[in-house]
View 1 (cartoon, helix red, strand yellow):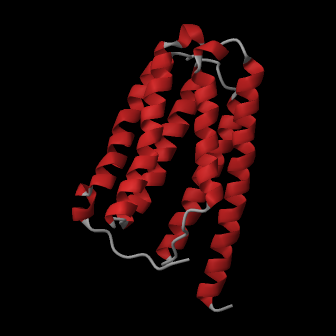
View 2 (view 1 turned 180 degrees about the vertical axis):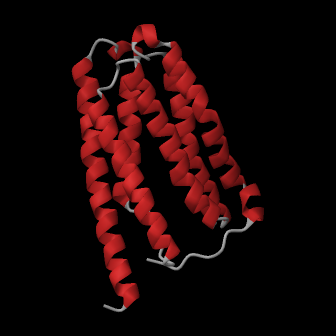
Length: 193
């Protein structure tokens, strides 16, 4: 748990933050590609390629921020937002083309929204939750599940898609539980109880 500083508009021009903003702005391209491939349940090599480029940008923006010492409050806000925009948007597009069942996608969406609301509340109290290994694993597994859903060779292999998305759900719920425990402990410690 750490105290958070003020936002600086100048930080939006940092290379790492520009990469993250690019991920947000390019995510609709991924959605369009999934929906355009509705006759093949959203599977296409174009979807896989764009998804991997966007996923790689998630790793690259963090590497740039750490290696250049340009970590910022904007980056801490934008990076998880970009992940949610990309992952949740793509997942719901896969639901729309009947590639993913809506229940696991709804569970992932609910967890993301609830944790975002909790983190916002804790941030108002001056607490910041550092990314845990489980959160990084969660994002990776969600990306793997979407990649499995997008792969043309697996177009008719529904069990692999179901297995991947339910594994992502399990890791997503575990990660949420860990964040919730950390946030509650930090809030209790900050209140002096």
